[in-house]
Image (cartoon, rainbow, N blue to C red):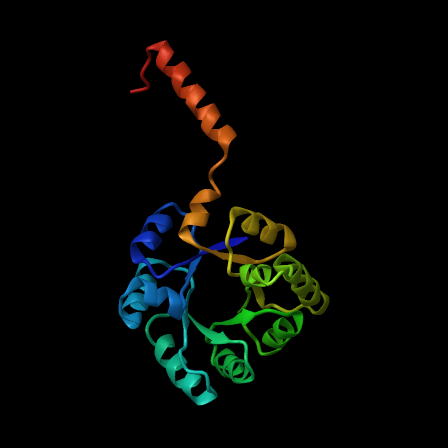
Amino acid sequence: MKFFVDTAEVAEIKELNESGLLDGVTTNPSLIAKSGRDFIEVVKEICDLIEGPVSAEVAATDFDGMVKEGDYLASLADNVVIKLPLTMDGLKACRYFTDKGVKTNVTLCFSVNQALLAAKAGATYVSPFIGRLDDINLDGMQLIEDIRTVYDNYGFETQILAASIRSANHVSDSALAGADVATIPPAVIRKLAEHPLTEKGLDAFVKDWKSTGQSIL
């Protein structure tokens, strides 16, 4: 499963990218607002920083506006992915960009039917929002499994991008459910490496090594 980081904080992206764990980045208007920076400036900086896909979301909600904004965003860098809402206008815009060879991420997916439409519109990625479904007592992970089944039934090439991830368990469960990608907040990516037995074992190894009085260098 590929890992995208879900943030607009360039310093966080740079640090995680240096670990070799990142395959891409997703941003959205809320993340840009939290960063307090200019949207276009941030997108350009992120695209210069990493080689993988960078999802940049349109602000318009009508087809013409999405196309105009998406064309501009696509001109910023070769690795920009146009992020579009899962509405009828968004799906129409998805087909427009797909036909032009521009990658798309259809976001705010909450049902199998929506995911089916995104695939038929030629989306590169579809983003089911796990956490937001869990928030209203629906099973977000079941949605990932159901989309996987439908896509495999018909050979759709659209990649399932598990989004709205809130915990380390969401990541492992998404991988088990067959998601192609997970877009994860920086803090959760770091949590993936943590385990109390790892920490306990490392403490013991360090203590034992010190007792030998040796040095590798």
